[in-house]
Length: 325
Image (cartoon, rainbow, N blue to C red):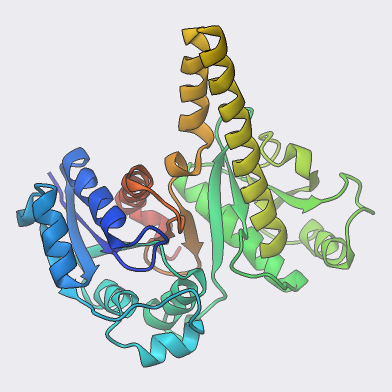
């Protein structure tokens, strides 16, 4: 059985390193082909591994006492905090060919900037995008890109995101011609702000893309498209609104089930939780870099870390996604 080595940055999450390390320990129990590199405070990592009875024969630690926080300027922190867990993780991912990917629950800006700085060749650097693969109503999945990495975008950037998302879905899900939609406030070609209207005209004639037109927010997860393109501000709102609405509906179902004593409603709540709760969905995938990098939710619990590592293992097993054609 082939072993996959995954790097987990234990620092930076809202819940602290213990939650990330516990999730990593649970992932070791779940995935027999997993080997972990953990970056962070060695003493904290070793204590948590011992507390959780982890198989330390499948773990190695890179001591990294410094932390890059959400309050640090991403590029400045990467240059100044060379002993941070993120810098150490990215360096190991770049230099160790056995390492196949990275999970991080800390600063999104630092992770994106660092992924380009450490992993991409200087002459081949492209602006990275953050993508979320979400379950679609019609079955299958929709790749929402960008979900928060790039707030102020140009039409050229959205076109690049369309190509990145289309390539990703074609390779991972074996879709011959992924359908690409553009998020707008109406399906008509004349709808949208200046950015959307200009991007629409470019995408209509863009070679290599199966552009199907504008997609309204109500149809974001309908399955009408395989890739939904938008700027990071709008994409982040779609993602978080979907999470919030799903959480509200699930909570209401649980309350109703407890009130009525109907077990079938609890079963329904569990089913929806597995599909739509962010802890079940894993994390955001960084597109535009040569190795798999996933940004876990800052508030991720142990289950979310397990699912994020599982998502990364899936990408590692489909490495042709990251090969040049």
